[in-house]
Length: 338
Image (cartoon, rainbow, N blue to C red; front, side):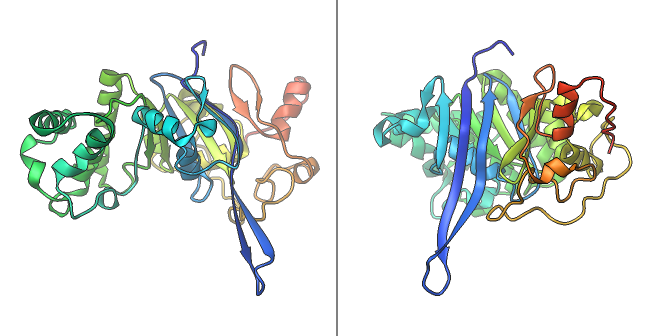
């Protein structure tokens, strides 16, 4: 892409440190996000996918500075959010919002819809009285909810209706960027489709930029322009959705994910790839490539040296020693159809 990124993530890390043991002297460091580089362009949807515990949600929250980064930069329109003081960050929050996974847990059950949706407007704008109520009604109608629900409470709605209300609240301050943290995973399949269609319509109408986090590859295939695949806190592959799902996936982990997804209509789906073992503990990741203990095509170097995330052609990024050796020696006969 030749556009200037709306969001640039450079070397972003989030490490959680705790002490344990009888005297609390043993330090445990969990590398939830480990030196991630990303660029998110205006009005695109970047999908982030991976197994549970790979750091997807922590990455999204760190970009919004809801979680404090351990290291790195998050550039929003060229400004490093990590370096902003609380006052400056408060002003920036108008332009960035998040929609959480569980709509039932997104709201305080003691407040009605008017209070819930109006809260960001009362905090960040001077709207009050009838003007405030009218703005809330407009937001609700924009997401497919009638204005008559203003004085009802969260327990009176279905999950899909609550997620529409959550979207209305997220749009209240006219943000440019939304982090969508598995916004459909707690919903029925038919309702999932409605919410996805709503998000796509709003993106087109309001020129929004999305970071869409999910473990559902069929949703990623439908909504994303590009896909970042995460494993143990790192991005191991990043490319266009078409490249990933049309047989162009390169990293062995991405291929295994695609082969295990029954709902994905993909040329990359061949024989099922069964990965041995489980995802490593991010507090004690294996040396070298973190995927090598489960990788069906690992080399001796994989357990010793961590591969870099490099461009293997046409902006397709991957971190795999096999692929990097292929770039360095294009005539070398390598078989990657694992």
